[in-house]
Amino acid sequence: MDERRSKIFRVRKGDTIGTDKGILRVDDVIGKEWGSEVRLSTGAKAYLLKPTPVDFTMRGFRRVTQVIYPKDSSLMVTLSGIGYGSRVLESGIGTGFLTAILAHVVGDAGHVYAYEIREEFARVALRNLSMMGLAERVTVKVRDIKQGIDEEGLDAAFLDLPDPWEVLKLLPGSLKPSSPVLVFVPSVNQVIKTLAWLKKGPYVDVRVYENILREYQPVPEALRPQTISVTHTGYIVFARLVRKTEDLPT
Ligand SMILES: C[S@@+](CC[C@H](N)C(=O)[O-])C[C@H]1O[C@@H](n2cnc3c(N)ncnc32)[C@H](O)[C@@H]1O
Image (cartoon, rainbow, N blue to C red; front, side):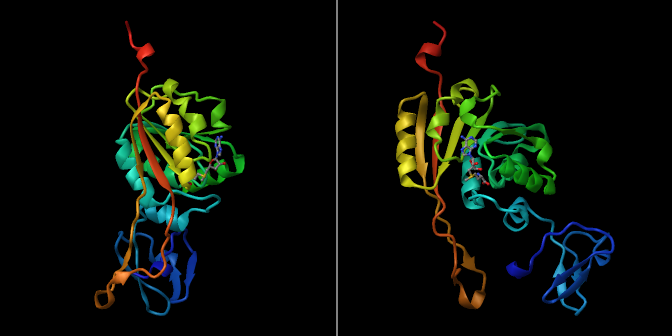
């Protein structure tokens, strides 16, 4: 498959999709099973592939902010232990890359509560999520998360905003004790500041990760790393929220 020639499109009767290899008549696609081969106007072959969440985010989403790439969101989700039915906190929503993965993982029995300070970003993110049919699993609150978190008893928190340490002190009222907190920050300075705040408690099991991924060009005759790749994304800080001694029943 040629990465540069893959397209995500909504099927509408009568439409045509132009490519440099020829034109695809959408009517030729309707009723075909996923994985089917179709022919363009020139006779060139194409395949109908059901988009995965990574396809939707990387190729279909309109981007308005820095985003959390799949290599980082996959590790964050795995570390968090969330799954079908989980209720999670996120801030900020940005473009909705991470939100899409969270909403996919929690399924229709779970929910994502996302706080975003910029209304225009919230609007774009919701439109992106609607494209995937996931908007109903997400409640977006357009405000500064530092003003307070409405929810209680959540299973995990995901923070991707410039000053996550300001939010750490609000989490004890919103997360179940023992819940994982995942912080994503692009610079080492922010990691250091986050660690300093985590040390003040009530957090334990603190870990810092940088996930380095190298993709190879899938060519048997010339197997080697891709020439161009994203070299730096950010750091993941993990911690678990605990009950403070003074919270314990006497
Ligand atoms: C880097 S972007 C998040 C990208 C997102 N994780 C994604 O994968 O698409 C950071 C977002 O945090 C938002 N933000 C910054 N400070 C905030 C605050 N105090 N409360 C809520 N949102 C905030 C910004 O407006 C921005 O949309």
